[in-house]
Image (cartoon, rainbow, N blue to C red; front, side, top):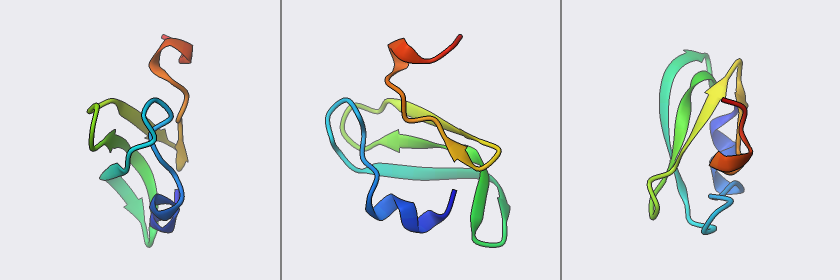
Length: 61
């Protein structure tokens, strides 16, 4: 995921901004980490550079 995407993505639950917590990077791309909502604190994982922005009840366990 490119960090520049933070300018256009938002929390699917309440449309608030997301904070990035990167675990693994490759240059300017985040390969692993999570996006955290600034309002409801819901977390969205980033795996293999792809953010999973599905609401919690729609994600696979």
